[in-house]
Length: 314
Image (cartoon, rainbow, N blue to C red; front, side):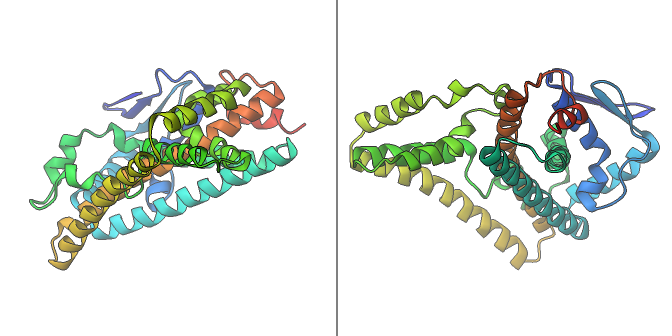
């Protein structure tokens, strides 16, 4: 993915993304940036091509001006941004979970719910825009007491850390003779999915190979003693808990001393946190989209959002 700004406006291209619905949703996310960030009108003059979008300069510049204010620590804009972000991700998470539960229990799709999930996926991709901004630009605006390295910290564990903890817990349960089919199924429906992301669009049943999952669990169980497994779990947790405690202390110190950098720090912490939350929801969304596509015989690479929803309506 890439972008450039010229006299026409802001131009973004998905370039190497090969899955049509993803290209459509990601391009559409740029139209929704003002709506998702602050609840304002979207870009009315956005122009779309097959894998790109152009926001005219007269619409882009006012948005970019406010975005720079946000990065410089505007309290009002930061508060609105964070509140909207939490609401958007909560809605996305809830819709995807409802879609998963419905499909797994009935093997049928509610078209309205599927359409809503695609829309919320598009909304969530607005936050990926910050991955395009050079870190040097963040540093240029920061107050003296604020640093990118200390603020770009997620308040939830990384998806890799979450999966490793759960896998180690299952290895400990296996060693104790307490690993039930229910625990294994819960793992394959949740943490195990974090092994992949966009690959789940190309759903295959052998990706759920229970023998392979069990092999990884038994290897851990055979390699480590009970105490060593417990120590691994505690080390995973302690490392993240220590980083989070330091982050909260930094935010508290900035707030208590009235440092204007508190809004910059709060903004960056929330950006880092949403990255992990969004990744986890995206994984579950792409997994269920892949399962639905396999059930209905939909060509996942060549089918756009509207056609995808239409094909599940019969």
